Length: 146
Length: 146
Image (cartoon, rainbow over all chains, first blue to last red; front, side, top):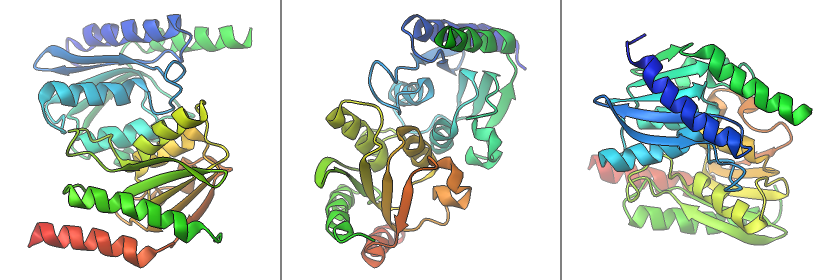
């Protein structure tokens, strides 16, 4: 865990809160390169009526625009919840350098299959602000059941 | 295999040829609902500088727009090459009713992991116009090596 991981995860959490407030599954992501946030996004599947509009997918597209290239080799993605298989696949194609996620996802997370979905050179960190990330998800789905 | 599978796969192949002509990895897709093509797309990862711009991803987004909802339960996707893990994940989220693909992809195809990436209710058909679909890919990559 690097010194600033919590700082950037808080930024990802801010994005997740925006999703929460819009009644979207509350997941947020930021992409960081050279200490600078070059992309931020939150889940918009409901508003866009598009199952592909996960925070990570939008953040990958925005980050590629920012760096002017398809590959995110020198970037870190901070995402509040473990990427799903679709996003894991997309992150694999992006060759992203590092992924930091907060809460795990035993049901839909990419790692329930195989870490090999991602690019072999990508470093993975989990558990940053895990409780806050989990808690936001829990609160959201409790609200749905209530 | 249904009677019209070849017909629609030819439409997907037309899309793949457009990608080929634009020097993109030549994969094309169409989405069919009630016998009507509601979305067509080809790979645009180079032009858009975006690893997420696979034919299937764009076709899912376009099809959701066409049906006015996130889920493609009553749709069939025809795609010239087996979807990758990202696209498999996206198709899983879309709950698409049926997938028909031409060429398999032993290296990047979703099925090298687990069919469970897709939605359990999705019917899968492969091998429609396999040779043509494979041949287009082969020609493209031979051109790259030449």
